[in-house]
Image 1 (spheres, rainbow, N blue to C red):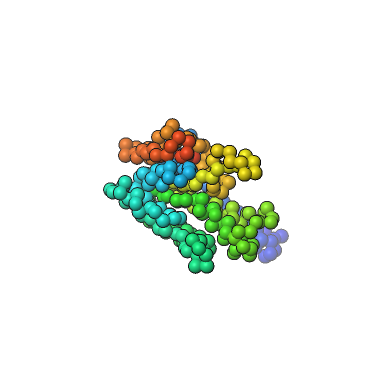
Image 2 (image 1 turned 90 degrees about the horizontal axis):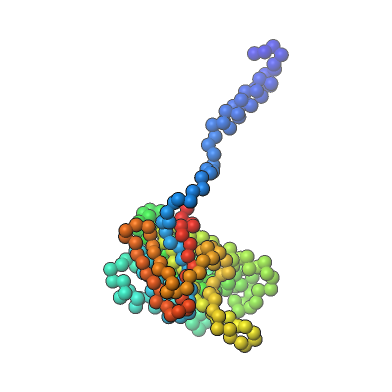
Length: 265
């Protein structure tokens, strides 16, 4: 030891050297990836919207199986005859409100949706080939129930009341987008369906123009690409065993928003 060095300075120097060594040997917690444009699309993520009876659910079920469906309303079983050789599994998530007439209890229903998403994610994690497509039919109902949940559980107001503060919508937006993003991140196809509503050009004046009734950011989550029915053929996958289907809507009444492999993570 240097004659001029004290035990304190020697100990400090040793700790400094140890810290430097540990820093040099520490592994990074994040890894940057090189952005490449040549990766082929692996999974199709689409949002389909249209008026009633335009083939939204049928189009969704035509995707590759096994298909797992989160159903927000009854009536899925009759379509099984159209896909006799396909593995399609579904869960009815709506929970009837005993206090209302034909009403859904939003909080319990959202709990069932969260559980359905967790089960699907667990299946994919255990065996990616066990789930080829996830269908959420429909996110129009999801958005309605999320708003009612926000009003009754968070804001403590009646579910039919108007939201007074604009920033309160953050509760509903976050809840809705969290559910969608969990599904978008799965390494499989994803099909969301939505119902259309007619817009008004003035008080009591219908415009004849229709728009989807879902949360406003849905279109941006799916790439902001809308293709009128009958002008495009949807293709799932990128190999010889692809599955193609067209919507059976009429004219412009069925549309879809497409994005390819954007959230396969």
